[in-house]
Image (cartoon, rainbow, N blue to C red):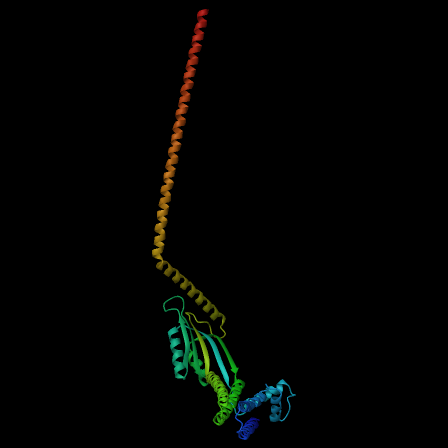
Length: 369
């Protein structure tokens, strides 16, 4: 099927090129702008035909492309989407390597953070890979553990070996892997590039035969567009080649004191791991508290001094207010006592006066008798 497709492409290109060449020779005496534009248009149509054929093989075209596809396969498309998928698979698998982009995301734990970073970097260089990006947070000696993330680009044939060696002393807590098949996209871009190269060659020939400024301008304009498309497609193909040749591995590294149990942990292992983690958390909490108190000691002393001064002032103000109230109460008490004594003295004087009057009355009564 692949050979038949290639033969069909060559026949179409050769036929169209011959027609254009004959048309150019027969119309050499006519140098008007419309003739030049027609040649450019015919050249563009000739370059687009191989792409239509390839598109038909991929099951994505209709109309004329569908008829070409039928001619190649020797049958019809009445089989539905399943037959199209089978045809695509067969076309891709014949004489062509699949283009697969592999991406791996991982999270690991380690007790020796520096050794883990060194192991990943050394193994990446040893196996022909490289570190694409990395970041790190935290510092050694703090209760907050350090962490890092490293993105490694590794040749596809060495990816599994790298993972087995670089991460041998670490516990993998998370892993996600995905593979994208870009074979059809890659094939379509290659076919488009081939068609554009044919068009570029024909435009170059027409440019050398052009005999008017208008023709030169029209051909060079289209030639510029073709070159731009070729550069764009070439860039996409190089990017695909890089992504296919080098797998992308993203590794998140966490420093811990107690590693999670790998695989199926027994009941006893789960208890030991839980106790160890809780003990470690309690110790870290006490350390954080002690560090916080010591580092904030000047501020704590300042707060205590300020609180003492405020308390003394409150006591002073309260004492002054209490003394004033005591004086007032003493003054009122003395005034009350004086008034009471005065009242008693007045009462005694009145009683004495009444006694004297009574004695005088009795004496007068005795004299009358």
